[in-house]
Length: 191
Image (cartoon, rainbow, N blue to C red; front, side):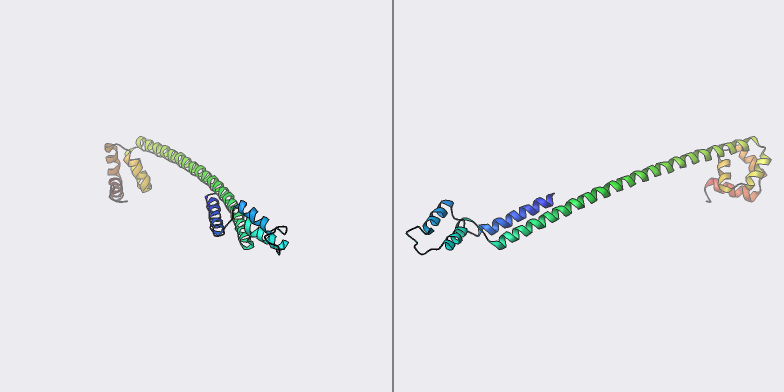
């Protein structure tokens, strides 16, 4: 809308500049001059009716066809631009609405994913806790056999939850290579 106001002011300014260069005679002066030009007037005996109409147009009304045509074209151009702006504005609003709907969908999807991840994390922690409980009830010899075959990450989770005395008994019964490897993983030396 600001653009349209700016264009309107620009046109008004151009029209003002154009017309300010043409002298407009006061209406009283025009009427007196027109009366002096009339065929019945004694002061101008050889003036025709066409000359009076032409003189009236020159004195009282600014009629310059090129200026009028320029103004008409400028108005048409402004109207076309206004219509284009209205269309563009409606397209922008539609796009904005579509984008906001997509953002809402993405936020809902993100929320579902995070909830799903939380549920999986809780389930995983429950399973690990249950596995730790199982290892705590097993004998050290049985625990050592199972830990030797367990995945490194899971073995570290289980071992890190055990008491030190129990862990020491299990590590003594395990293969020395596997025991040292798990110790390095627990200490964070290896990853």
